[in-house]
Each structure stands twice: as C-alpha cells, then as structure tokens.
Image 1: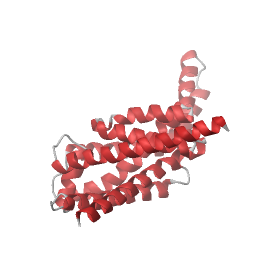
Image 2 (image 1 turned 120 degrees about the horizontal axis):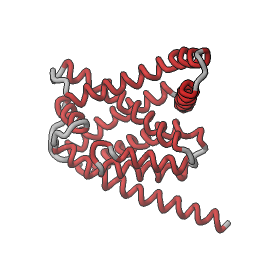
Image 3 (image 1 turned 30 degrees about the vertical axis):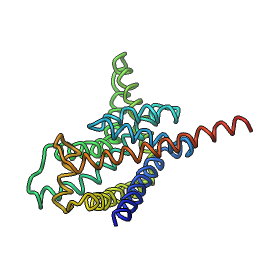
Image 4 (image 1 turned 90 degrees about the vertical axis):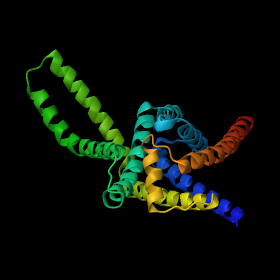
Length: 253
C-alpha cells in the first residue's frame, strides 16, 4: 500500500511540474529557446528555488533564462509573468479560504493580493497614460529635460509592448495551467500526508499555503520540500546529462 501511495505521489508530483514547465515554456517559446535546453534549465532553477527560501531563487532563474534566451528582457519578463499567474492562482485559492474558513487574512496574503492588483492596474492604465504623456511632451516646449523624459517613456513603452507580446493569446491557457498545478499539488500533499500517516484536510492545506508565503514553520512543508529537492535533483541530473550528450553528439556529427 505504501509503495502504491509513493508511486501515486511521484506521478502526480511530476505532472505538477510538467504543467508548470509548460506554462513557462508558453511564455518563452517565441524566443526560439530550444526545448532540450529549456528542460534542464527549468529543473535547475526549480531546484535552486526549493533550496533558497522566500523565492529568492527567482533572481537566479532570471539570470539563467537571460543566458539561454540571449536577452535580459526575456529572462526578466518571462519569470515575472510566470510568477504573476502562479501567484494569481494561489491568491484565488488562499483568499477565499482565509475569508470564509479560517477567518484570518494574513499579512503575506494581503501583500500578494496587493502585488497582483498593482501589476494588473499598471498593465491596464499604462497604454492611455503613455498616449497622454507622449502627446504632452511632444507638444510642450522642447528642452533637454523633455527629450530625456520622452526617451524614458519610449523605453517603458518598449518594455510594455514586449511583455504584452509574451502573453498575447495565452492568458487563458496560462491561468488554466496555474490553477491545475495548484489543484494537483493539493492532491500530492494529500497523498504525501497519507503516506506519512497524517490527515490532510482544508485546514491543513491552509496551513501549508500560509507557511509558503510566511515564516511559519510547518512540518508538512519541511518534509514535502525535502522530498521535492531529492526528486527534482535526480531529474535535473538526468536531463542535464541527456542534454550534454545530445550537444556532444551534434558536434561530432
């Protein structure tokens, strides 16, 4: 029975990360990033994220995707967009739980919600703001300062258009993948806790989520993270070696 539970947990865990991996690949696929190179890069950065707390590993992920895509904008915005949709799905699950079940909305949840709202508002109000400011600067008295402001505005618009291009036509799929990943992660946690001889209900899931976004210590999170590190590390080695062998064979061909 324990072997079956372990196998089920491993299968669903892998499915969670396949979905997360494909979600981010949807963002970078137009940048001609080789999928064979992308997979070990995703696994390696995920491993670092599991080891380094508070998602500081995302800085490493930006650097990695900057290197494999050849552009800082791709590295930065691909990670930002991936985090945005992942966090949006998390907030959609966490906020109703804390409002109607635990009756305790935590500071981390508020901060995550504020982040999501701020990004959405910025995305929506930038185009009309850009049009207004662009017309105003152009029609105002020409000066060195106004030319500098216009240059900054054009740079910001370039970043906006670039980030918009990364998600255009993909909003629904990205959101669906994010929700599916979190739902399947709940299933993995339920199986994992049963494997450890512990119950796992709605309240326990709430504790787990709160421990992710805060410094609250939670045994399930520690055990699950440790198991995740082992599995992801194994897959990282396998797919990195596979990629290096493929690269070597192409050079020798």
